[in-house]
Amino acid sequence: MQLGETSRKYAIAAVVVVAVALALAIFLRSSNTPDVAGPKKAFFSVNDGKTWFVDDITKYPPFQHEGKTAVRARVFTTDGGKTSFCGYLERYTPEAKSKLEEADKQGVKRPGTRPPVDLELIFQGIEAKAPGGSGWVNRSAGPAYAAVVIVRGKGPGQNPEEVFP
Image 1 (tube, one colour):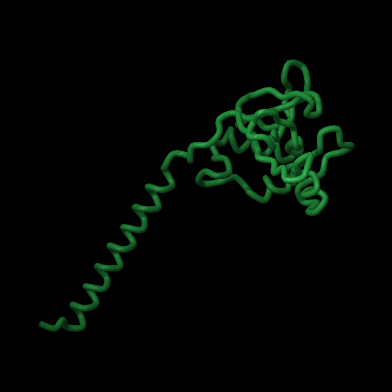
Image 2: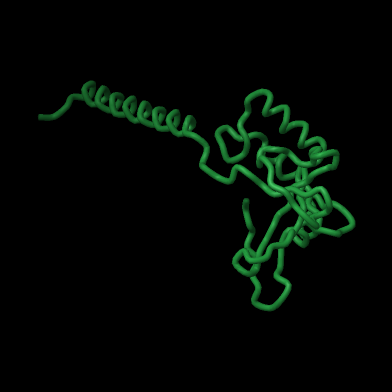
């Protein structure tokens, strides 16, 4: 049995409608899925990485903690967690922090969720500093930023691994 030209058009239209409906259903389902489980806590420091404490990962550093300015502390180990050290410190620029807090107030989801806030803002709004270092380096500084955030072990064969609370 052969389909006539009109029947063939209806069959193609039906297949297209079903495909679009299926794609829309998949999209809507995936955009309402819960965020991927990840760390809920992070390390922060108020003394240039000499010591650190655990707090909610959703806080945007810098923020006030017990009367001092806290920034994110990226903590590493080279011996499987027996000892650890602060590899570098991280904070947002005032502009980026303000925009991220405003996005939270408006219900816009964070990066890694759907829909993300402006990723360009995130990349340009992060600064890093070596513990004891003299100044903050913006992520847009390329090699200068990489020199701060690429953490090396203290001796040969030591490969630092980031530690999470």
